[in-house]
Image (cartoon, rainbow, N blue to C red):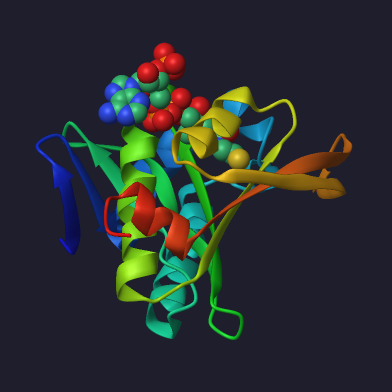
Length: 185
Ligand SMILES: CC(C)(COP(=O)(O)OP(=O)(O)OC[C@H]1O[C@@H](n2cnc3c(N)ncnc32)[C@H](O)[C@@H]1OP(=O)(O)O)[C@@H](O)C(=O)NCCC(=O)NCCS
């Protein structure tokens, strides 16, 4: 219902309670590929868990501390994208994203993140947008590079997973760099 249309085939929508079943099904059919990167997949075991996530996302929307959106691609829920942490004190934010396999390889995340970063920079006045990924996550690393984010370093044992701790890369883009890249510098 509350929608940011990106183009003919792609839009971001505020997730609502009634999306919980569809969101859970998407996680469930992609469980194997998602759990390699996200510890939360293990604890998403039934639609009620996805409903809880949606409630948290809506609360973050109210508080202005996050904006996790459902991605609708060719009329189907295809994944989730958003700043999951907006920290007003330091004027920075961190984005995260995932897609079901069916939608992969079409620029869906690059286009979605572009809209999200535009919102953060132009509407929220955020100065720095970060993203992180596990070293082995080539597809995610390529998204950040496609967005023009700079790799700033490696955070040792940052992610606690069921198989142990993992090192992650941290990438970021600054508002000035983003505006220049978008021709608004
Ligand atoms: C990480 C992830 C979101 C990347 O998805 P993706 O589809 O590879 O990323 P994009 O949406 O940027 O699409 C890029 C691909 O679409 C193609 N493409 C088509 N149109 C495009 C456009 N307008 N803009 C950018 N790329 C486009 C690119 O050439 C690229 O193709 P390739 O994969 O054959 O090289 C996805 O692999 C995923 O969900 N993985 C599991 C969860 C995960 O790892 N999340 C991130 C944790 S840090």
